[in-house]
Image 1 (tube, rainbow, N blue to C red):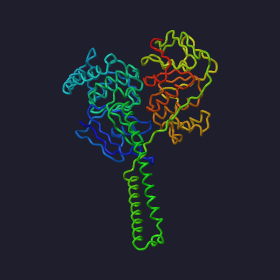
Image 2: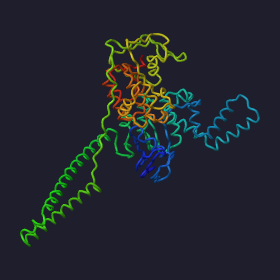
Image 3: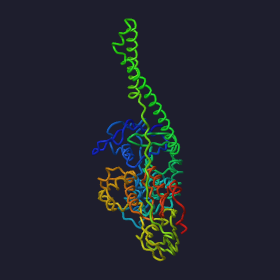
Image 4: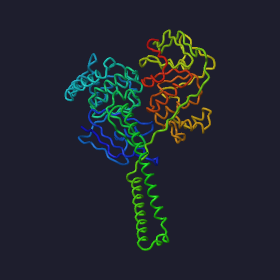
Amino acid sequence: MQFIQLKNIHYRYPDQYKSILNGIDLVIAEQEKIALIGKNGCGKTTLIRIILGDLQASQGSISYPVHQPVISYLPQDTKVSASLAVEDFLLGVAPAKYEVISRLRHLEHKQELSEAEGLALATLWHEYHSLDLASWEADVNSVMLEMDLMELKQRLCASLSGGESTRLQLAALLLEKPDILILDEPTNHLDLEQIGWLEDWLNAYAGAVLYVSHDKSFIDNTASKIAELADGKLEVRMGNYESFTRDQTQLKEHQLVQYRQRQILLRNLREAAQKRRSWASSIQPETRSEGGGAVYESISNAARTQMQQARNVEKRIAMLNGRYAVERPSFEKPRKLDFGQVQQSRKELLNISGLCFSYGGSPVFSDFYLNLGSGERIWLSGANGSGKTTLLKLIAGELAPDAGSISFANRIRIGYYRQDLTELDPLLMVRAYLLSSGREEGQIRTLMGCIGLKDALIEERIGRLSWGERAKLQLLMLLMGEYNLLLLDEPTNHLDLKSREMLGKALREYNGSLIFVSHDRAFIGQVSTREVNVDRG
Protein backbone atom coordinates (compact mmCIF):
# COMPACT_ATOMS: atom_id res chain seq x y z
CA MET A 1 0.00 0.00 0.00
CA GLN A 2 1.32 3.43 -1.00
CA PHE A 3 1.17 6.07 1.73
CA ILE A 4 2.58 9.05 -0.17
CA GLN A 5 3.67 9.96 -3.70
CA LEU A 6 5.87 12.91 -4.65
CA LYS A 7 5.73 13.88 -8.34
CA ASN A 8 7.97 16.40 -10.12
CA ILE A 9 8.87 18.31 -6.93
CA HIS A 10 10.90 21.50 -7.45
CA TYR A 11 12.15 23.90 -4.82
CA ARG A 12 14.21 27.08 -4.88
CA TYR A 13 15.06 29.17 -1.82
CA PRO A 14 13.97 32.82 -2.19
CA ASP A 15 17.52 34.16 -1.90
CA GLN A 16 18.97 31.72 -4.46
CA TYR A 17 18.70 31.76 -8.25
CA LYS A 18 19.26 28.03 -8.62
CA SER A 19 16.76 25.35 -7.57
CA ILE A 20 17.99 22.84 -5.00
CA LEU A 21 15.35 20.25 -6.05
CA ASN A 22 14.61 19.65 -9.74
CA GLY A 23 11.85 17.20 -10.57
CA ILE A 24 11.89 14.85 -7.58
CA ASP A 25 9.75 11.69 -7.80
CA LEU A 26 9.39 9.42 -4.76
CA VAL A 27 6.91 6.85 -3.49
CA ILE A 28 6.85 5.73 0.16
CA ALA A 29 4.95 2.49 0.62
CA GLU A 30 4.02 0.25 3.54
CA GLN A 31 6.93 -1.49 5.34
CA GLU A 32 9.58 0.15 3.14
CA LYS A 33 12.86 1.22 4.74
CA ILE A 34 14.25 3.97 2.50
CA ALA A 35 17.73 5.41 3.14
CA LEU A 36 17.99 8.99 1.85
CA ILE A 37 21.65 9.71 1.06
CA GLY A 38 23.62 12.49 -0.59
CA LYS A 39 26.33 15.06 -0.03
CA ASN A 40 26.09 17.59 2.78
CA GLY A 41 24.00 20.54 1.57
CA CYS A 42 22.43 18.66 -1.38
CA GLY A 43 18.85 19.25 -0.15
CA LYS A 44 17.95 16.20 1.96
CA THR A 45 16.59 18.30 4.84
CA THR A 46 14.71 20.51 2.36
CA LEU A 47 13.02 17.44 0.87
CA ILE A 48 12.08 16.18 4.34
CA ARG A 49 10.58 19.58 5.24
CA ILE A 50 8.46 19.47 2.08
CA ILE A 51 7.19 15.98 2.99
CA LEU A 52 6.40 17.19 6.52
CA GLY A 53 4.57 20.24 5.15
CA ASP A 54 6.98 22.78 6.66
CA LEU A 55 7.90 24.01 3.16
CA GLN A 56 5.73 24.46 0.08
CA ALA A 57 7.21 23.08 -3.13
CA SER A 58 7.75 25.62 -5.92
CA GLN A 59 6.32 23.10 -8.38
CA GLY A 60 4.99 19.55 -8.33
CA SER A 61 2.50 17.65 -6.22
CA ILE A 62 2.21 15.40 -3.18
CA SER A 63 -0.63 12.89 -3.22
CA TYR A 64 -1.95 10.28 -0.80
CA PRO A 65 -3.40 7.31 -2.72
CA VAL A 66 -5.33 5.89 0.27
CA HIS A 67 -5.52 8.48 3.05
CA GLN A 68 -3.41 11.30 4.37
CA PRO A 69 -0.80 9.48 6.43
CA VAL A 70 0.33 10.26 9.95
CA ILE A 71 4.00 11.27 9.65
CA SER A 72 6.25 11.41 12.72
CA TYR A 73 9.70 13.02 12.62
CA LEU A 74 12.85 12.45 14.67
CA PRO A 75 15.34 15.33 14.13
CA GLN A 76 19.12 15.09 14.42
CA ASP A 77 19.34 16.66 17.87
CA THR A 78 17.75 13.96 19.97
CA LYS A 79 18.63 15.29 23.43
CA VAL A 80 15.51 15.76 25.56
CA SER A 81 15.94 18.63 28.02
CA ALA A 82 12.58 18.23 29.76
CA SER A 83 12.61 18.09 33.56
CA LEU A 84 9.93 15.38 33.50
CA ALA A 85 10.48 11.72 34.27
CA VAL A 86 10.52 9.36 31.28
CA GLU A 87 7.05 7.96 31.99
CA ASP A 88 5.55 11.43 32.44
CA PHE A 89 7.18 12.63 29.21
CA LEU A 90 5.54 9.82 27.27
CA LEU A 91 2.17 10.28 28.95
CA GLY A 92 2.47 13.95 27.99
CA VAL A 93 2.41 13.07 24.28
CA ALA A 94 -1.34 13.50 24.79
CA PRO A 95 -1.45 16.69 26.96
CA ALA A 96 -5.16 16.57 27.80
CA LYS A 97 -4.91 12.94 28.91
CA TYR A 98 -1.74 13.59 30.88
CA GLU A 99 -3.33 16.52 32.74
CA VAL A 100 -6.15 14.28 34.01
CA ILE A 101 -3.72 11.48 34.97
CA SER A 102 -1.27 13.80 36.77
CA ARG A 103 -4.04 15.59 38.72
CA LEU A 104 -5.55 12.23 39.65
CA ARG A 105 -2.19 10.91 40.89
CA HIS A 106 -1.62 14.07 42.90
CA LEU A 107 -4.91 13.79 44.76
CA GLU A 108 -4.57 10.02 45.29
CA HIS A 109 -1.22 10.49 47.03
CA LYS A 110 -2.60 13.00 49.55
CA GLN A 111 -3.17 11.61 53.05
CA GLU A 112 -6.26 13.71 53.66
CA LEU A 113 -8.65 15.35 51.21
CA SER A 114 -10.90 18.32 51.73
CA GLU A 115 -14.51 18.12 50.61
CA ALA A 116 -13.67 20.07 47.46
CA GLU A 117 -10.71 17.81 46.72
CA GLY A 118 -12.93 14.75 47.21
CA LEU A 119 -15.41 16.06 44.68
CA ALA A 120 -12.54 16.88 42.26
CA LEU A 121 -11.21 13.32 42.68
CA ALA A 122 -14.61 11.85 41.84
CA THR A 123 -14.83 14.07 38.75
CA LEU A 124 -11.34 13.06 37.64
CA TRP A 125 -12.16 9.35 38.01
CA HIS A 126 -15.21 9.90 35.83
CA GLU A 127 -13.01 11.61 33.19
CA TYR A 128 -10.45 8.82 33.52
CA HIS A 129 -13.02 6.18 32.60
CA SER A 130 -14.86 8.23 29.97
CA LEU A 131 -11.60 9.01 28.16
CA ASP A 132 -10.42 5.39 28.53
CA LEU A 133 -7.14 6.56 30.05
CA ALA A 134 -6.39 3.04 31.28
CA SER A 135 -5.82 2.12 27.61
CA TRP A 136 -3.57 5.17 27.19
CA GLU A 137 -1.42 4.14 30.18
CA ALA A 138 -1.28 0.60 28.78
CA ASP A 139 -0.09 1.97 25.41
CA VAL A 140 2.65 3.96 27.16
CA ASN A 141 3.79 0.90 29.14
CA SER A 142 3.78 -1.23 25.99
CA VAL A 143 5.94 1.28 24.12
CA MET A 144 8.36 1.56 27.07
CA LEU A 145 8.75 -2.22 26.99
CA GLU A 146 9.34 -2.19 23.22
CA MET A 147 11.94 0.59 23.54
CA ASP A 148 13.61 -0.99 26.58
CA LEU A 149 12.75 2.00 28.78
CA MET A 150 11.00 0.37 31.74
CA GLU A 151 14.06 0.56 33.99
CA LEU A 152 14.36 4.27 33.14
CA LYS A 153 10.71 5.23 33.67
CA GLN A 154 11.45 7.33 36.77
CA ARG A 155 14.67 8.87 35.40
CA LEU A 156 14.61 12.56 34.47
CA CYS A 157 14.73 13.06 30.71
CA ALA A 158 17.52 15.64 31.05
CA SER A 159 19.79 12.98 32.60
CA LEU A 160 19.52 10.52 29.71
CA SER A 161 22.40 9.70 27.37
CA GLY A 162 22.16 10.35 23.65
CA GLY A 163 21.15 6.75 22.98
CA GLU A 164 18.53 6.76 25.73
CA SER A 165 17.14 10.06 24.40
CA THR A 166 16.86 8.51 20.93
CA ARG A 167 14.89 5.55 22.31
CA LEU A 168 12.67 7.90 24.31
CA GLN A 169 11.83 10.08 21.31
CA LEU A 170 11.19 7.02 19.16
CA ALA A 171 8.79 5.82 21.85
CA ALA A 172 7.01 9.20 21.78
CA LEU A 173 6.69 8.96 17.99
CA LEU A 174 5.22 5.44 18.17
CA LEU A 175 2.50 6.69 20.51
CA GLU A 176 1.37 8.92 17.64
CA LYS A 177 0.71 5.67 15.71
CA PRO A 178 2.44 6.94 12.54
CA ASP A 179 2.12 5.51 9.04
CA ILE A 180 5.56 6.91 8.18
CA LEU A 181 8.56 7.49 10.43
CA ILE A 182 11.14 10.04 9.23
CA LEU A 183 14.48 9.82 11.04
CA ASP A 184 17.35 12.29 10.54
CA GLU A 185 20.75 10.74 11.36
CA PRO A 186 19.32 8.37 14.02
CA THR A 187 22.70 6.73 14.77
CA ASN A 188 24.36 9.99 15.86
CA HIS A 189 25.25 9.79 19.56
CA LEU A 190 24.56 6.03 19.74
CA ASP A 191 27.20 3.53 20.82
CA LEU A 192 27.74 0.28 18.92
CA GLU A 193 25.39 -1.72 21.14
CA GLN A 194 22.64 0.89 20.73
CA ILE A 195 23.16 1.00 16.94
CA GLY A 196 22.75 -2.79 16.88
CA TRP A 197 19.53 -2.45 18.89
CA LEU A 198 18.21 0.21 16.48
CA GLU A 199 19.02 -1.99 13.47
CA ASP A 200 17.10 -4.90 14.97
CA TRP A 201 14.18 -2.66 15.89
CA LEU A 202 13.94 -1.08 12.42
CA ASN A 203 14.09 -4.47 10.70
CA ALA A 204 11.21 -5.70 12.90
CA TYR A 205 9.14 -2.50 12.63
CA ALA A 206 6.05 -2.98 10.46
CA GLY A 207 5.64 0.66 9.38
CA ALA A 208 7.28 2.68 6.61
CA VAL A 209 10.54 4.48 7.41
CA LEU A 210 12.42 7.20 5.52
CA TYR A 211 15.74 7.97 7.14
CA VAL A 212 18.80 10.08 6.46
CA SER A 213 22.05 8.34 7.34
CA HIS A 214 25.70 8.43 6.38
CA ASP A 215 26.56 5.24 8.25
CA LYS A 216 27.39 2.68 5.56
CA SER A 217 27.09 -0.37 7.82
CA PHE A 218 23.76 0.84 9.25
CA ILE A 219 22.36 1.40 5.74
CA ASP A 220 23.55 -2.01 4.55
CA ASN A 221 21.87 -3.68 7.54
CA THR A 222 18.50 -1.90 7.35
CA ALA A 223 17.63 -0.35 3.97
CA SER A 224 15.30 -2.00 1.46
CA LYS A 225 15.66 0.94 -0.93
CA ILE A 226 18.29 3.66 -1.52
CA ALA A 227 17.34 7.18 -2.63
CA GLU A 228 20.37 9.31 -3.56
CA LEU A 229 19.91 13.06 -3.96
CA ALA A 230 22.50 14.69 -6.23
CA ASP A 231 22.39 17.84 -8.38
CA GLY A 232 18.71 18.31 -7.56
CA LYS A 233 17.75 14.85 -8.89
CA LEU A 234 16.71 11.76 -6.95
CA GLU A 235 17.87 8.31 -8.04
CA VAL A 236 15.98 5.45 -6.37
CA ARG A 237 17.04 1.79 -6.42
CA MET A 238 16.08 -1.35 -4.54
CA GLY A 239 18.62 -2.93 -2.20
CA ASN A 240 21.18 -1.68 0.29
CA TYR A 241 24.06 0.76 -0.15
CA GLU A 242 26.54 -1.85 -1.29
CA SER A 243 24.28 -3.03 -4.11
CA PHE A 244 23.36 0.59 -4.94
CA THR A 245 26.97 1.68 -5.42
CA ARG A 246 27.76 -1.49 -7.40
CA ASP A 247 24.75 -0.94 -9.70
CA GLN A 248 25.57 2.76 -10.02
CA THR A 249 29.17 2.02 -11.03
CA GLN A 250 28.08 -0.61 -13.57
CA LEU A 251 25.44 1.75 -15.00
CA LYS A 252 27.93 4.60 -15.43
CA GLU A 253 30.45 2.25 -17.06
CA HIS A 254 27.73 1.07 -19.47
CA GLN A 255 26.73 4.68 -20.19
CA LEU A 256 30.37 5.55 -20.87
CA VAL A 257 30.64 2.69 -23.40
CA GLN A 258 27.43 3.93 -25.08
CA TYR A 259 28.73 7.50 -25.14
CA ARG A 260 32.06 6.47 -26.71
CA GLN A 261 30.30 4.33 -29.32
CA ARG A 262 28.03 7.26 -30.14
CA GLN A 263 31.07 9.56 -30.55
CA ILE A 264 32.66 7.09 -32.99
CA LEU A 265 29.39 6.89 -34.95
CA LEU A 266 29.10 10.70 -35.08
CA ARG A 267 32.70 11.05 -36.24
CA ASN A 268 32.15 8.50 -39.02
CA LEU A 269 28.92 10.22 -40.10
CA ARG A 270 30.59 13.65 -40.17
CA GLU A 271 33.42 12.25 -42.31
CA ALA A 272 30.93 10.61 -44.68
CA ALA A 273 28.89 13.82 -45.03
CA GLN A 274 32.03 15.86 -45.62
CA LYS A 275 33.30 13.46 -48.33
CA ARG A 276 29.99 13.59 -50.17
CA ARG A 277 29.84 17.39 -49.99
CA SER A 278 33.44 17.71 -51.12
CA TRP A 279 32.93 15.43 -54.11
CA ALA A 280 29.70 17.16 -55.17
CA SER A 281 31.29 20.60 -54.80
CA SER A 282 34.36 19.55 -56.82
CA ILE A 283 32.26 18.99 -59.94
CA GLN A 284 32.59 22.39 -61.61
CA PRO A 285 30.18 23.49 -64.34
CA GLU A 286 33.01 23.50 -66.89
CA THR A 287 33.86 19.90 -66.00
CA ARG A 288 30.28 18.87 -66.22
CA SER A 289 29.92 20.21 -69.75
CA GLU A 290 33.06 18.67 -71.23
CA GLY A 291 31.57 15.35 -72.13
CA GLY A 292 28.41 16.52 -73.80
CA GLY A 293 24.79 16.17 -72.88
CA ALA A 294 24.51 12.57 -71.62
CA VAL A 295 27.76 12.64 -69.66
CA TYR A 296 26.93 16.04 -68.27
CA GLU A 297 23.54 14.87 -67.06
CA SER A 298 25.04 11.77 -65.51
CA ILE A 299 27.70 13.69 -63.59
CA SER A 300 25.24 16.38 -62.56
CA ASN A 301 22.75 13.82 -61.22
CA ALA A 302 25.50 12.07 -59.31
CA ALA A 303 26.59 15.37 -57.73
CA ARG A 304 23.02 16.21 -56.69
CA THR A 305 22.59 12.70 -55.24
CA GLN A 306 25.80 13.01 -53.22
CA MET A 307 24.78 16.43 -51.94
CA GLN A 308 21.33 15.12 -50.91
CA GLN A 309 22.92 12.16 -49.14
CA ALA A 310 25.22 14.56 -47.32
CA ARG A 311 22.19 16.57 -46.17
CA ASN A 312 20.44 13.37 -44.99
CA VAL A 313 23.51 12.34 -43.01
CA GLU A 314 23.72 15.81 -41.45
CA LYS A 315 20.04 15.60 -40.44
CA ARG A 316 20.78 12.30 -38.73
CA ILE A 317 23.75 13.88 -36.96
CA ALA A 318 21.49 16.71 -35.74
CA MET A 319 18.97 14.19 -34.37
CA LEU A 320 21.70 12.20 -32.62
CA ASN A 321 23.00 15.41 -31.04
CA GLY A 322 19.52 16.63 -30.14
CA ARG A 323 16.51 14.49 -29.41
CA TYR A 324 18.47 11.23 -29.24
CA ALA A 325 21.62 12.59 -27.62
CA VAL A 326 23.68 10.40 -25.29
CA GLU A 327 25.26 12.42 -22.50
CA ARG A 328 28.67 11.62 -21.14
CA PRO A 329 28.23 10.21 -17.60
CA SER A 330 29.74 12.38 -14.92
CA PHE A 331 32.37 10.79 -12.72
CA GLU A 332 33.09 12.78 -9.61
CA LYS A 333 36.69 13.87 -9.41
CA PRO A 334 38.29 12.21 -6.40
CA ARG A 335 39.00 14.70 -3.64
CA LYS A 336 41.94 14.18 -1.32
CA LEU A 337 42.49 15.39 2.21
CA ASP A 338 46.02 15.70 3.50
CA PHE A 339 46.88 16.39 7.13
CA GLY A 340 50.48 16.85 6.04
CA GLN A 341 53.70 15.31 7.20
CA VAL A 342 54.23 16.47 10.76
CA GLN A 343 57.27 16.24 13.01
CA GLN A 344 56.83 13.19 15.17
CA SER A 345 58.60 12.06 18.30
CA ARG A 346 60.61 8.83 18.13
CA LYS A 347 59.57 7.88 21.64
CA GLU A 348 56.33 7.53 23.52
CA LEU A 349 54.12 10.49 22.72
CA LEU A 350 51.67 10.31 25.63
CA ASN A 351 51.64 8.57 28.99
CA ILE A 352 48.67 8.47 31.38
CA SER A 353 49.41 6.96 34.76
CA GLY A 354 47.03 6.31 37.68
CA LEU A 355 44.39 8.71 36.34
CA CYS A 356 41.43 9.37 38.64
CA PHE A 357 38.50 11.65 37.85
CA SER A 358 34.99 12.14 39.21
CA TYR A 359 31.89 14.14 38.30
CA GLY A 360 30.00 15.29 41.38
CA GLY A 361 31.48 12.52 43.50
CA SER A 362 30.69 9.84 40.93
CA PRO A 363 33.94 8.21 39.71
CA VAL A 364 34.57 8.12 35.95
CA PHE A 365 38.19 6.92 36.05
CA SER A 366 39.92 5.10 38.86
CA ASP A 367 43.61 4.29 38.40
CA PHE A 368 43.48 4.46 34.60
CA TYR A 369 46.61 3.86 32.47
CA LEU A 370 47.27 4.56 28.80
CA ASN A 371 50.35 5.02 26.61
CA LEU A 372 50.42 6.26 23.01
CA GLY A 373 53.30 5.43 20.70
CA SER A 374 54.44 7.50 17.75
CA GLY A 375 52.13 7.08 14.77
CA GLU A 376 49.54 5.03 16.69
CA ARG A 377 45.81 5.47 16.00
CA ILE A 378 43.87 4.45 19.11
CA TRP A 379 40.12 3.86 18.99
CA LEU A 380 38.42 4.51 22.35
CA SER A 381 35.54 2.06 22.66
CA GLY A 382 32.88 1.77 25.34
CA ALA A 383 29.23 2.41 26.05
CA ASN A 384 27.76 5.90 26.10
CA GLY A 385 28.56 7.52 29.43
CA SER A 386 31.67 5.41 30.03
CA GLY A 387 33.96 8.46 29.90
CA LYS A 388 35.38 8.53 26.35
CA THR A 389 34.70 12.24 25.80
CA THR A 390 35.84 13.00 29.35
CA LEU A 391 39.17 11.29 28.64
CA LEU A 392 39.70 13.40 25.52
CA LYS A 393 38.95 16.56 27.53
CA LEU A 394 41.47 15.50 30.19
CA ILE A 395 44.15 14.92 27.54
CA ALA A 396 43.33 18.25 25.88
CA GLY A 397 43.67 20.03 29.22
CA GLU A 398 40.06 21.18 29.38
CA LEU A 399 39.59 19.17 32.58
CA ALA A 400 42.04 18.56 35.43
CA PRO A 401 42.44 15.05 36.91
CA ASP A 402 41.71 14.41 40.58
CA ALA A 403 44.82 12.25 40.81
CA GLY A 404 47.43 10.66 38.56
CA SER A 405 49.40 12.21 35.74
CA ILE A 406 49.20 12.96 32.00
CA SER A 407 52.60 13.59 30.39
CA PHE A 408 53.57 14.37 26.80
CA ALA A 409 56.68 14.18 24.66
CA ASN A 410 58.42 17.43 23.74
CA ARG A 411 57.04 19.64 20.95
CA ILE A 412 53.57 18.16 21.10
CA ARG A 413 50.86 20.03 19.18
CA ILE A 414 47.32 18.88 19.96
CA GLY A 415 44.33 19.38 17.67
CA TYR A 416 40.94 18.67 19.25
CA TYR A 417 37.70 18.00 17.35
CA ARG A 418 34.61 18.33 19.58
CA GLN A 419 31.54 16.33 18.60
CA ASP A 420 29.14 19.08 19.75
CA LEU A 421 30.90 21.65 17.50
CA THR A 422 30.80 24.16 20.38
CA GLU A 423 33.99 25.80 19.12
CA LEU A 424 32.06 27.36 16.26
CA ASP A 425 30.48 30.76 16.97
CA PRO A 426 27.25 30.88 14.90
CA LEU A 427 27.48 34.68 14.56
CA LEU A 428 31.03 34.62 13.14
CA MET A 429 31.64 34.85 9.40
CA VAL A 430 33.27 31.77 7.86
CA ARG A 431 36.03 33.91 6.33
CA ALA A 432 36.98 35.44 9.69
CA TYR A 433 37.01 32.02 11.36
CA LEU A 434 39.24 30.44 8.72
CA LEU A 435 41.61 33.42 8.45
CA SER A 436 42.25 33.06 12.21
CA SER A 437 44.33 29.99 11.23
CA GLY A 438 46.98 32.32 9.80
CA ARG A 439 46.67 30.88 6.27
CA GLU A 440 46.24 32.99 3.12
CA GLU A 441 42.72 33.22 1.71
CA GLY A 442 43.74 31.65 -1.60
CA GLN A 443 45.11 28.60 0.19
CA ILE A 444 42.01 28.44 2.38
CA ARG A 445 39.71 28.43 -0.67
CA THR A 446 41.72 25.58 -2.21
CA LEU A 447 41.42 23.52 0.98
CA MET A 448 37.68 24.28 1.16
CA GLY A 449 37.31 22.64 -2.25
CA CYS A 450 39.33 19.63 -1.10
CA ILE A 451 37.07 19.03 1.89
CA GLY A 452 33.87 19.60 -0.11
CA LEU A 453 32.87 23.09 1.04
CA LYS A 454 31.45 25.38 -1.64
CA ASP A 455 33.54 28.48 -2.26
CA ALA A 456 30.51 30.77 -1.73
CA LEU A 457 30.17 29.60 1.90
CA ILE A 458 33.14 31.78 2.86
CA GLU A 459 30.73 34.74 2.73
CA GLU A 460 28.20 33.12 5.11
CA ARG A 461 27.75 33.23 8.85
CA ILE A 462 28.57 29.93 10.55
CA GLY A 463 25.06 29.76 11.99
CA ARG A 464 23.59 29.50 8.46
CA LEU A 465 25.62 26.40 7.59
CA SER A 466 24.23 22.88 7.79
CA TRP A 467 25.58 20.59 10.51
CA GLY A 468 27.58 18.72 7.87
CA GLU A 469 29.14 21.95 6.62
CA ARG A 470 30.01 22.97 10.19
CA ALA A 471 31.66 19.61 10.78
CA LYS A 472 33.77 20.08 7.62
CA LEU A 473 34.64 23.60 8.75
CA GLN A 474 36.05 22.34 12.05
CA LEU A 475 37.93 19.55 10.27
CA LEU A 476 39.38 22.15 7.90
CA MET A 477 40.88 23.99 10.87
CA LEU A 478 42.57 20.76 11.92
CA LEU A 479 43.95 20.33 8.38
CA MET A 480 45.60 23.74 8.62
CA GLY A 481 46.98 23.32 12.14
CA GLU A 482 49.94 20.97 11.50
CA TYR A 483 49.16 19.00 14.67
CA ASN A 484 51.11 15.85 15.56
CA LEU A 485 48.42 14.56 17.95
CA LEU A 486 44.74 14.63 16.95
CA LEU A 487 41.92 14.06 19.43
CA LEU A 488 38.73 13.36 17.47
CA ASP A 489 35.34 12.94 19.16
CA GLU A 490 32.85 11.41 16.70
CA PRO A 491 34.41 13.11 13.65
CA THR A 492 32.10 11.33 11.16
CA ASN A 493 28.85 12.63 12.70
CA HIS A 494 27.01 14.79 10.14
CA LEU A 495 29.45 13.90 7.32
CA ASP A 496 28.16 12.35 4.10
CA LEU A 497 29.36 8.90 3.02
CA LYS A 498 32.02 10.05 0.56
CA SER A 499 33.39 12.58 3.07
CA ARG A 500 33.63 9.84 5.71
CA GLU A 501 35.56 7.61 3.35
CA MET A 502 37.84 10.50 2.36
CA LEU A 503 38.50 11.42 6.01
CA GLY A 504 39.26 7.78 6.85
CA LYS A 505 41.79 7.56 4.03
CA ALA A 506 43.44 10.85 5.07
CA LEU A 507 43.80 9.70 8.69
CA ARG A 508 45.18 6.33 7.60
CA GLU A 509 47.92 8.16 5.66
CA TYR A 510 48.53 10.69 8.46
CA ASN A 511 51.97 10.17 10.04
CA GLY A 512 50.99 11.80 13.35
CA SER A 513 49.26 10.10 16.29
CA LEU A 514 45.54 9.84 16.82
CA ILE A 515 43.07 9.08 19.62
CA PHE A 516 39.48 8.98 18.45
CA VAL A 517 35.95 8.11 19.49
CA SER A 518 33.62 6.71 16.84
CA HIS A 519 30.70 4.35 16.43
CA ASP A 520 31.02 4.16 12.64
CA ARG A 521 32.14 0.57 12.06
CA ALA A 522 33.46 1.16 8.52
CA PHE A 523 35.48 4.18 9.70
CA ILE A 524 36.88 2.32 12.72
CA GLY A 525 38.06 -0.54 10.53
CA GLN A 526 39.63 1.92 8.11
CA VAL A 527 41.57 3.98 10.66
CA SER A 528 42.36 2.28 13.99
CA THR A 529 45.54 0.39 14.85
CA ARG A 530 44.61 -0.35 18.48
CA GLU A 531 41.47 -0.47 20.61
CA VAL A 532 41.31 0.78 24.19
CA ASN A 533 38.06 -0.07 25.98
CA VAL A 534 37.27 2.69 28.45
CA ASP A 535 34.66 0.53 30.21
CA ARG A 536 37.48 -1.68 31.44
CA GLY A 537 39.87 1.17 32.04
